[in-house]
Image (cartoon, each protein chain N blue to C red):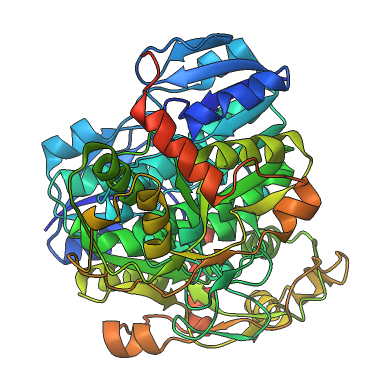
Length: 298
Length: 298
């Protein structure tokens, strides 16, 4: 397995390297800015402006793991950059198959689904995104799935639910909560009544690698299958450091259009891919706290 | 109105220039190979390989009419080039709005729809393409429609049904029939029982220009609203030159998956855009025969 990965410096991508190396994959990173990760080979490439075809023709990867996307917290939901990433992703997959590649995994999102029902299933829930981000991902999925036979591509699509983890951006919910707990400062939150499907980012990355290593094709939900109220999750991690008093629930409004409950149907991930998570919420949150406190060497 | 058009040398595009000039638009052509059309300015640009941003920043168009796509007869339905055209179209629209453009029309297709019902309506018929071409167009539509508010773009999408006309490719149905009638040679056809919505290509182009000139947004069917059996259409044009005996119906198999009847709901085109066709089937077919017989100067 000679594998090319994009987005390896991102929140999910950085946790995908170890499980890939553990499977003896030869890992080639495409990065916007230079990077050194032990056991891998890095190439500088801007997917938005550079044609990836010459580089991929040189590497001749058999496998592709495409995680890169525009992900600026708060902005990505309706940013026009989503259009650029659809275009760049199509170009990347074309260059990959032209170079002889035959198995690809691309990152999707639970935001592709219609959110009017709480349990989101690959087979039964229609795609009906409320946001441009969701629409861009859903459209990319539909085109790639339809193109796969023509491209002689074995194509998998991981619909990621709600990852959390130690190095989450402070501009995101759990990142700001971890910062508050570790610094002893207050944090303003919504009431947090909405229930979501949270999964430790290391499990998300491991699930994506398992999916890529399988021969499962099409969309597969990457989630825990369990819904937890945001408030309960926050209280759980705060309680680990006796910091519940720092959590200002209700100080921020609920975002409009937020459904009360969203949870992944994980039947495909568990039965077809055979994925087993390493963390539950208690061990996952403890890990996030412990590792955020002591960041790794850069 | 300062307008940029792509695909102006194509089957539909070449008939769009006159109605655009008749509306006093300043017409700028983006062409892969150099072209001279009276009253217009042409620029050489390969949309698949060249970044259109610098040129559009120079032209500063207010309007965009994007018709270019991969259209090789017989091959385009499932060709991987459809992916390249999604990417190129997204890049083009991004460059257009970045250059200050605010009104765009892009060519869609009736192949975006679910074909299990005969009357195809923008509001009521789900998109469920059977082909990669249809999926690529449907996905491009969905992403652009969702992005339009962010891009401050007034966006219209013309879903073209079945155009026919004098300079139709000999590799397409009516092109081969016109060739047979004019040359006195036989032509092998299917039984031709399927009913389709045929429209003279000059009317298709004029309808697209009317749509662009209106402030109607979203998808609009570009069709006649009337279904005619392929066999009846062929017999009508053959009878005009007493050539019915040249038509070998049943000599070719029906293509698999061809639904018996497809017709456009033309309520939006007629009521909201206010389009009036110039041709009916009799005058349209007579025009196609007459002008194919005497091709224009190149």
